[in-house]
Image (cartoon, rainbow, N blue to C red; front, side, top):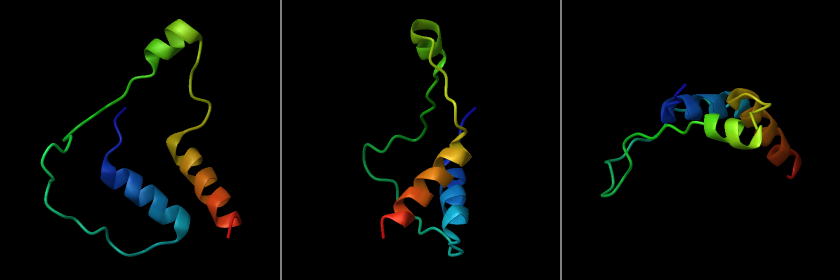
Amino acid sequence: METSDQDIFDTIAKALGYSNSPIYTSVRPGEIQRICLDWSKAEQELGWSPKTTLKDGIAKTVAYFLKQN
């Protein structure tokens, strides 16, 4: 399952209570337009699979950094 930059932004913004829109700029030379990582080989070779969803991982990361202040 792919996750867009916008989905990442929205998830982080929600976790932070941030309501402003992102600022978009022109694509930079050499910018990767699309990437999707697949953890199935890690599962096959190492027996590893993610234990946390992306949404929960972002929420935990935001909570951690908010506690640091």
